[in-house]
Length: 408
Image 1: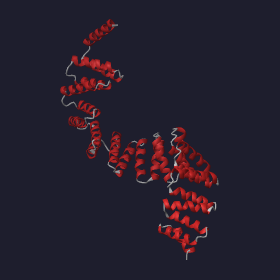
Image 2: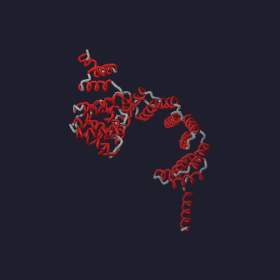
Image 3: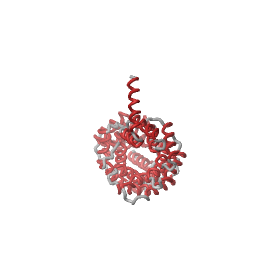
Image 4: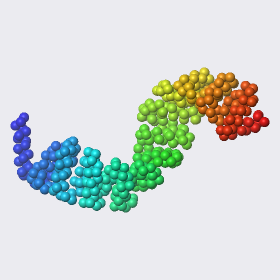
């Protein structure tokens, strides 16, 4: 075996003697293209042995060494490339990338700056220096770099699209939504099939409460084949905000049936959508799943109870309200809802007990108004008027009308 290796090395050595430095370099580049980095490194090494000032060979040997995981050798080769050619902008650039990888950010910025000094229109160096500035929270300097890079092209050139995207990301970090929106829009103008840009612009629109327009952008992102769990969840949220419950259910079904999220919140949201559509049996089915995955999910018990109540299934409703109260015994809203159920059942004594607890834990105009109604049916007009007066104090308009009818 050793003899075979020796013979191969001799053959390579004999072959290299017959090849020029350019031949060896070209062979190295071919091996690099094939991701055969050990052979590429070997040929770049033979190249610099034949021609010690072949600075490109040092650079590309360093790139291959880095891809093989040897940062130390790569750094030495980048250094050597710069020694052989002091204005070698590509060597400064790649050394800067390695400094970033090693978290030496100030050194990286220095190298990207040197690359730009050597080649003033080096777009890649501007972009990487901007990313590095972002890492040290120098957002304005990062934006200056991106704007400078953009100025090298006409505004609507395809080369500018990634620069506008990067600019938008920086504006988002600075919480400058208007500017971020405009930058994403410019990116989309140049690359109208950029689903990710539609998605990111949709998030900005969602953040400022423009839910309908955000939905259009999420739809466009999905149409452009940019669809994942987060896109669908954002789409669910805005659909629910503008009461497009059927559309929300479509995305929730995809999350649960296609992406198999099995997420409690997804089941709960689907239950809420069905409830809003007054499809109570479907809502109950989804709330069942939510409760199965989280036995302490109070809201799922509350809303399932409300669905049972509306479907005239009082025993099941009572059981769910009771379960919710056991989980959160000081939640006034649950006592209120169970009190309303008892009121509808004309069980005023139990309703009063629950509504007393509702106003104790969570006093509100609606809670006082409802307790006033219960007291009125129990024949306690004075107590009813007192509660109506308290409800009026909370701004309850209906309480004011009823008070004027029964309390004067």
